[in-house]
Image (cartoon, rainbow, N blue to C red; front, side):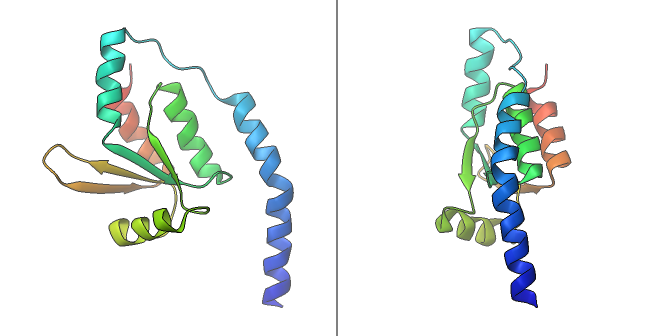
Length: 129
């Protein structure tokens, strides 16, 4: 019975995945405007960030849209397609849950931030207009 349920949900994901990806492309907001100096500063700060996610996760889509709206260049690490990213997420953050924002602070400390609403709130506090 578990096998049937598993295959049912895999089938649902196969059908919904392209719809979700197209929907994300069509509804992603345009980035906020910044001066070149401000954008350079933001890009430098984004080098210390990485988002662990996978392509069709609705919560990851929510975070990617906020990243696009804020005009951020954050490295995206797909935990579904890359086992090394998944392993790094488990070892660093302690969970395989996505989305997860890895924040490398200037003092050398690493922070692993889970939950899309918490990630979006943090991004808005750091980079919002």
